[in-house]
Image (cartoon, rainbow, N blue to C red; front, side, top):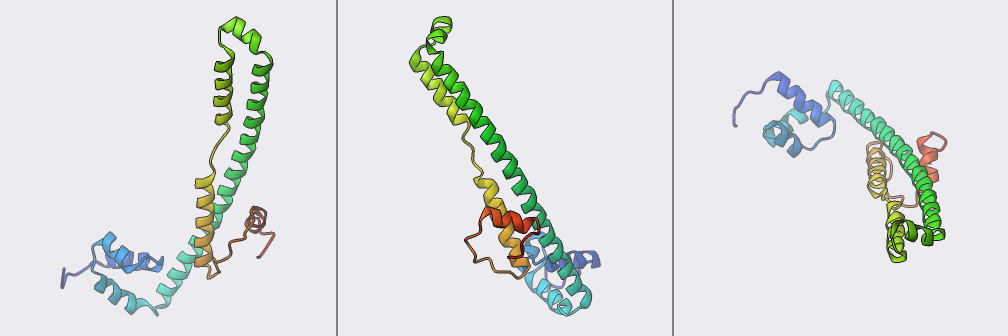
Length: 173
């Protein structure tokens, strides 16, 4: 609304959101303040030392939390891959046991050979899983923290080993 007075608390909240690199239109939508008012406030405080310090602090907090999220996601991925390998070995062993004992199983349970083959195939599909969502999260957070840190995000030949070294602080690439 034109000519509307905004509370100091609302102005501080808007400036804090702007300091975290939210867009004017996003802050406007969230707080129901016109973009022009936000632009005026931002311009007024753009060179304000406290505002600049707050922006830098929020940027640093984001970079740190992005690295923590990447590190945690890599750990989860490693644990899931290890578990998946163990499950895969177990399923393969079960399938072999079923194949070797198919005649006895048929006699004892009445489950025929083709039904057993179908069960084996179903068991094998249990070992398939997707890490695509986790890897997408890792890649997205890596890019976002790099952008927030004024680093290039063009590099596409990152290997998991190199990313792990970077997360563990053993590489500065």
